[in-house]
Length: 378
Image (cartoon, rainbow, N blue to C red; front, top):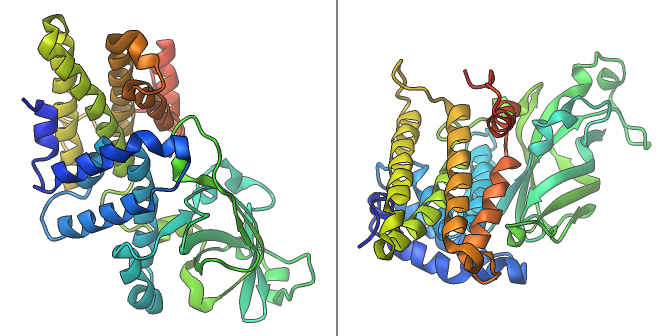
């Protein structure tokens, strides 16, 4: 009998069960081969298009994808981030000629924007600089984290306009202007491959290695005004925000991973009744948290709710960590074997402590782990 978690997970779309089955048939092999799962991406792209014709919430497909394969689901969030930045731009050429092939799965797009929202933002020299060069710019620097950059057909990259020190033409308004005028931010859409763009093949990670996440170096990459998606702006990430679920997709992926571990406990409890108490508790927590996620996406708030996007992320992360470790405690030595999915789930759960984890969420995790009251999520 399917667990209540699985029944709730597949309720929103009849094709969800088939998607999960197909993703799960390959996920165990991905990190061993370190091969980017482009076929999975195309499969999920088709699934997303089917879901787009329904009234279901945008986070629901990502929970299903993460239940099937967290690596693929993570890649799809980066693709989605690129799509949103194109959709919300005023670049009609990109929307008419590029966006359709990305949405169909024919082409893959990803983002290089994390450096615009991390502590590197305040450094004297931005990680990626846009130096004026005639009617365009030359991009110089490094984006430290890009998923699937080595296989991308298109890259949405953030850069800060910066005076040139390499002989390139620098307009007088930048040379003599204020600091704010020299730190205008842009998002550019780059077609790959591109002269001067060097993407790493993928770092060896604790988990999700097949996402081929690595740095990208820019050595004089040429862009023009036709490549601008957003900017100039002093905060181009805020200016390019596409609305919708946004950061809730991170919580959705944690919920999908937690569902895998909880379903394992449920199946074990069917033959080991002593585990039923623990399985039922985690199932109840998952269903309650899913209701809160639905309410957040619907924009429903009230004094009865203790959740905002950051507290949701903290609770979803906790559930992923607790449920996967509970599964390990039940699986025991078998779960610690390389071939067992429980070990992979435990490794993947650590990902949520580092991926898109704001300072407040990180501090809240530390407070929980050290039994200190947290002021961050009050």
